[in-house]
Amino acid sequence: EAQVTQNPRYLITVTGKKLTVTCSQNMNHEYMSWYRQDPGLGLRQIYYSMNVEVTDKGDVPEGYKVSRKEKRNFPLILESPSPNQTSLYFCASSLQAGGFSSYNEQFFGPGTRLTVL
Amino acid sequence: DAKTTQPNSMESNEEEPVHLPCNHSTISGTDYIHWYRQLPSQGPEYVIHGLTSNVNNRMASLAIAEDRKSSTLILHRATLRDAAVYYCILRAIHRFGNEKLTFGTGTRLTIIP
Image (tube, rainbow over all chains, first blue to last red; front, side, top):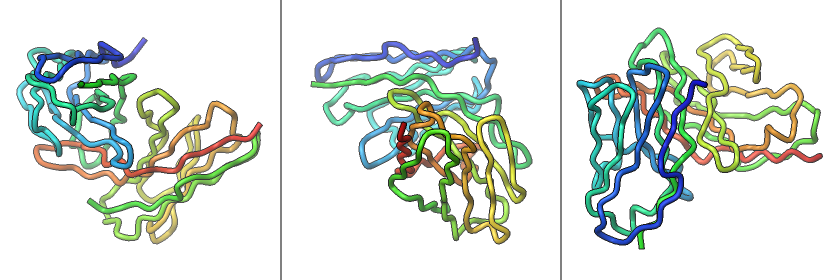
């Protein structure tokens, strides 16, 4: 089944304890992205990756890191989590991005609910 | 990014058609109109997109006004599974080709059995 998977789905942690949320897609997609969803703010992009060679900041990258060592995986790393990073996180992927004359739908993972105490 | 405006909430009876409106008066000529929906406790999922002409797929239809300043997502026969938040989004390609989706607050659709 074509899908985007995230792990863990739920995580409660404490301030300052490094954590990684994994994201993996099995559709051979080039483009991957991380969003966070907060009440009243919608989904905001954290980081994105056009392919394994290009990764860049989104709108709210502070406090997060990512890596794209292989096409299928795009982990989100919180080196020193803080309570303001308590949120619902979504990973998304699409076949490719940036084509003005075509569009590839984005597929989202099921979400990771993170609580930082 | 050009902005979209949607009603906060709508209700519809099961098995009846639903028309979800979206205003996008500042749309540019190259902006595609996308619709995604988010079912409870799930990630967003793609519904449909279009540029100028009306579009149909297995999930829904998209009716685009002639001046493109508004559009309507049509669910032909709503079921309880269609209860979700529906987002109308204008496509914008950002730096390096980033296809960031700018989600607003969307329309929360409630289906009445």
